[in-house]
Structures are given as structure tokens and as C-alpha cells.
Image (tube, one colour):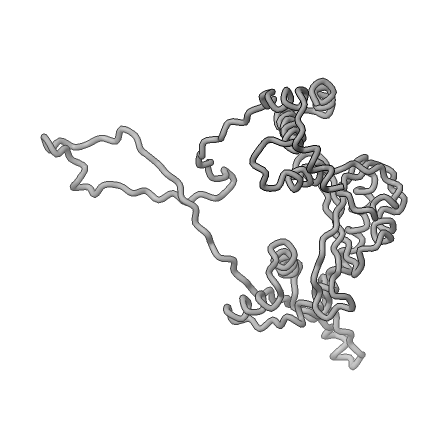
Amino acid sequence: AGELFNEAEDILDEHDKALLATSPLVKKEKAKPKRRPLPAQLPRVEVVVDLDEDEKVCNCCQSPLHKMGESSSEILEFVPAHIKVIKTIRPKYTCRHCEREGIESVVKTALMPATAIPKSIATPSLLSQIIMCKYQFGLPLYRQETLFSDIGIELSRQTMSSWMLRCAELLSPLYQRLKEILLSQAVIHGDETSLNVINAEKATSYMWLYCCGDDKPGKGTNIVLFDYHNSRAAHCVVDFLDGYQGYMHVDGYKAYEQTKATLVACLAHIRRKFIEAKGNNKKTVKADVALNLIRKLYGIEQAIKGKSVSEKFTVRQQKA
């Protein structure tokens, strides 16, 4: 099949040549680099760099100078995070009258404030910091252990690991609610990626990902959920989707065909196959026709970026 495909690549008819000759729909101009202003919500500290009083005279006639305006510039300063200890004090109260009369006196004190993990030193802010560093920025617990040690805090990776397991239990209701919202969307995306797990039963595990919304947070619903399995079997996605029947944007992996979703092919994966078919061939071949058409489709999408759904639909029907 590969040889037949390669042979067909060498044959370009007049229609193919016309498609290649057509200029792309949208030519995106290269944006000139421009420094963006620093966010207005950040606190400002004004530092005035002024002339000395003896310099506020004219070099020519020695007359006093007057202020005609000023120039300003802004630089960004990083203030390292600081850690503090919150000491909870609960006063104890008893009855002096009962003490004098020899009556048993009950000691009263306020209840201990609720904590995420009882009898631990972790506050919600500390837990969220560890979670963010580990899962969002890929900083393993053993490195975080070193970071804490450098500022004089002994916090073992075993302790933090047990905290992460506990947090997973606490956040489970939120995960389930997000899953409900995700599966209520008309369109979702799915993919799976290999994952190496130390001391796992199988050499390769998989993290299945499901998401909806845009690449960047906006007004819509943006959710990304991870579902870990030590398998790439179809039952993983079938069980997660639980009968979902909307559109699902995926690659060509056969497991997704066993779901009840309406599959939508990924154009980026399709394009990749034509690039592989072209290989290092310098001359124009059949694959270039497909790549040129895909480039035009990308051009249409770039032109309608930011428009409403109805506007996008109209343009796509007219041009795509």
C-alpha cells in the first residue's frame, strides 16, 4: 500500500496544480515584538530619583530650574514567598464558685477550628502550594523536601505524600462534579499518554485526558480532567464516558470507536501523515496538495478566531 501511495504522489493532474497555485486564504503578518505594560493590579512602590539641590540650577546662567514634567519607567521585582507559623490559642474557663463550694467544675474552651487534615501542621495554603508545585509545575516531592529544608523546615516527602493522598480524597467530590459538567458538554476532547510509574505492576501506565473549552481560559467552560490507568484498553475510556453521546475530538486510536460518542477526527494528526508521506522529497508531490489545503483551512480558522459560534459556522460553510 505504501508503494502504491508513493507512486500516486508522482502524478499531479491539472486540478492538483491549480490547487497548489492558489494563494493561501489568509497570510498572517509577523507581529513585531512589543513589551506589554505590567499588570495594573500589581502594587506599586514609587522611587523618585531627583537631582541634588545644588544641581537644580542652569549650567549657563546659574538661574534656578523649575520642574517641567517627569519621565517614568517600571521594572518588576520578585518578593520571595515567606512561611509563617499560625499559633492557635484557646483560652480555658472554669467556675470559681463551684471551685469554692467543692462542686465539680467543668472546664470550657472553644472547639478547635476545622482543618483540612486533622492533627497535621498543614494549612490549606500549604497543601495547595505543594499540589501546585507537584502537579502543575512538575516539581517532585523530594525536590520540595529540599526547598523546605533550605529554609530550615524539616518536611519529609513521606509526610507530603500522605497529605497528597488525603487531599485526593477531599477533592474527590469536586472532581466528580467537574466530570458531570464535562460530560454535559456538546463537544469534548480526549487523548491518552504513556506514564512511567515506579514499582508499578506494568512497565507502562497511561494517563487518559479529557477536556472541553478553549486553549485559554475565557467565558466558556474550560475543564481538564485526568484519569489514571495501568492499561490502554478500551474499557478505560468506555467506563469514564459512561454512555456520553456528544461529539468527541480524538486521534485515530481504535479504543475510542467502542464508545457511544460521535468521533471527530483530529486534523493535526491527519496532517502529520501527509508530512510523513512527503518525507524528504524536494519536488512537489501529491502530499503537497493535501498540506496546502490543510494550510488554507488553518488560515480560515485564524481569520475567524474570536468570533461567535454562528459567525464561525457561516464562514466555515462558505469557505472551508
